[in-house]
Length: 244
Image (tube, rainbow, N blue to C red; front, side, top):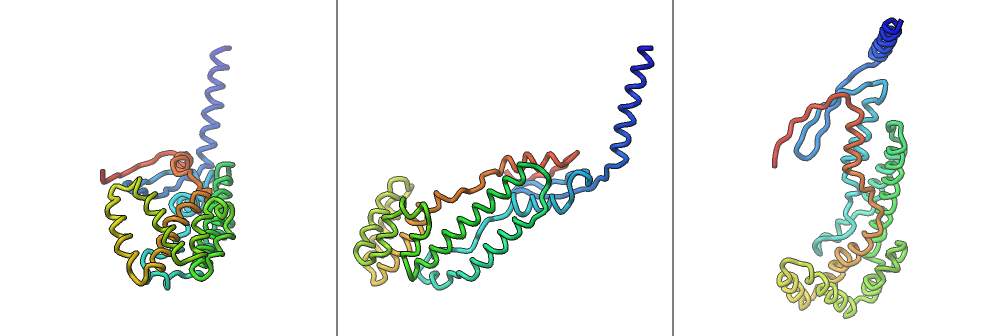
């Protein structure tokens, strides 16, 4: 009798696995990281190709909001483009809101965190571009407004207060720079030129203000966890890696 029951249980398990395999439909999906190419086999009844693409492109590999908000050289100020920023922000946030993602709390939380990141980053970039003509626009960025007050005041005041703020910023940066002499040379060179106030404004905006305010952006730091969760969708994975 015991042998019969054991055999019956084995038969049930075998039939159950067979039925699951009968309804499962397998497909392959390819993706890339910096040094590797992957090909994974997945069950289309569990996750769709569109969902995998959305996770990979929108949540894992997307470069974020890339429109520049501050110039790297004096002539670059005229290339700052608020219209491009608004277009990029609108499109990327909308795609995240509408994207079909796999079921699961992890993916929904990641979506919400990425949307929050983009919304706050767009707000910061929007105000930083506006500050070229109206430095007080930076006061709209909360809570950076309070913590980064010294940079805002210097940009609003202009003149020698701007130069003093640039000098103070220089001394702070020299403490942790591998080539403080190079930073000092740059300051000495530009601080005697007719464009010194414009250059000081650019340096404070790009480095002082931006580095300070950027600390308050809640970047969704999930990279390693995303890859872990993403790989769970696949039954088998083949990889080919190059480089170091």
